[in-house]
Amino acid sequence: MPTLETERLILRPFTEDDAPAMFAVNAHPEVTRYTGDGPYVDVEAVRAVIRSRTLADYAKHGFGRWACVEKASGELIGFNGLKFLEELQEVDLGYRLVPRCWCRGLATEGARVAIEYGFRVLRLPRLLGLVHPENARSVRVLEKCGFMLDRQFEYHGAPTLRYVLASAMT
Image 1 (cartoon, rainbow, N blue to C red):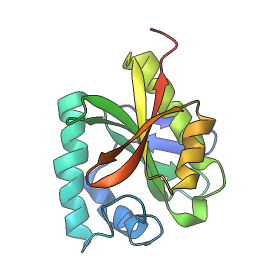
Image 2: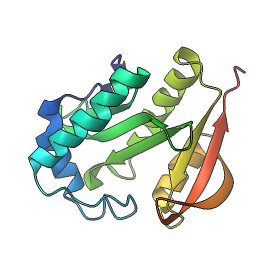
Image 3: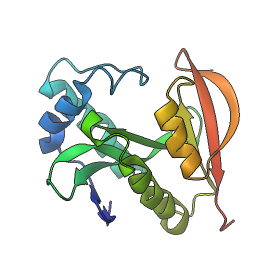
Image 4: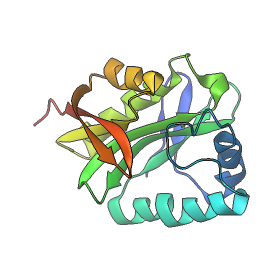
C-alpha cells in the first residue's frame, strides 16, 4: 500500500495505532448515520476491525481504505479509498470524515486520487460508489467525481444507490 498525497491530504496505510483516532471519528452519530455500522463500543473494537478488515484487505487484495490525514493539522480525520466487496465482486470507493471537515471538498479531493490510483495503477475496469439514498453529501462527492447512478437495490438490509464510474483506460 503506497502513501498518496493531495494538496491538503495524506492518504496512508492504516496501522493498529490508528484505532483511537478512528474511534473518535466514528463516535460522531452524524458520521455513521447512513453507514449501518454505528459507533464502536471501544478502541479495542476498532483495533480488531483494522486488523481483521483493513489490514486483511491489504494482504489479500493489495489495496484497501487509506487513513486520511489532514496535512495542516497532522490529524487523522477519517478514511478514503478503495475496498474489494467480496459479495459483489466489485471495488467500492468509500470515504468517511469527521464533521469539521465536511463541505470543504476534502472527501472529493481524496476520492479523486483514490480513483486515479484504482484506474492507473490497479488497472480496474470500473468502480462502484454505494450510498444510502438520503446521504446527499456522499451522493454529491460521487457525482463530482464523475460517477453515474446505475440503480437502487437492497444491500445489507438497507436501500442503497449504486453509482458506477468506468475507467477511460479500458
